[in-house]
Image (cartoon, rainbow, N blue to C red; front, side, top):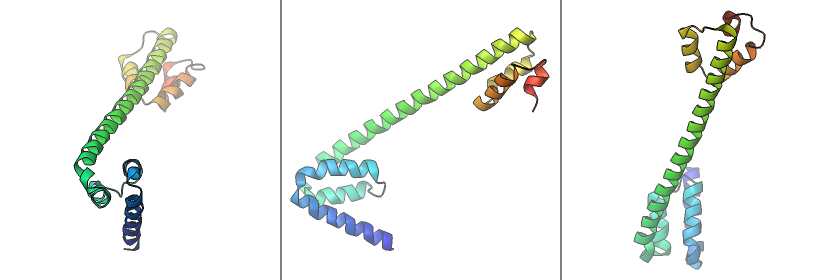
Length: 142
């Protein structure tokens, strides 16, 4: 296809440019790996082999370590973000339960279950309704 042949042409131009500046190989490859999914391991190996064949083992090993480290960091960041979101949700649910208990004591178990399984937007809607509601039904109407 046309896109594929363009990609091959770009890769060949890149290889020729890097042959004239082999010290730029590592940063350019890091950029390609981080930015473009079209540059898979096989393509990266081909570029290294054509520019600095003596560095293939060292560079591929280093890239593997760096990619693994990056993946771990992204997973940790995602986990922290999910934990914070879950904590916020639990806090909002807890506050809603506290306010409802204060206004409409005692709360039926079903209401407690609904709050603990509700999404953040629904909890926010219920929290807004508690201000004017005269009964639990007015808070939880659909």
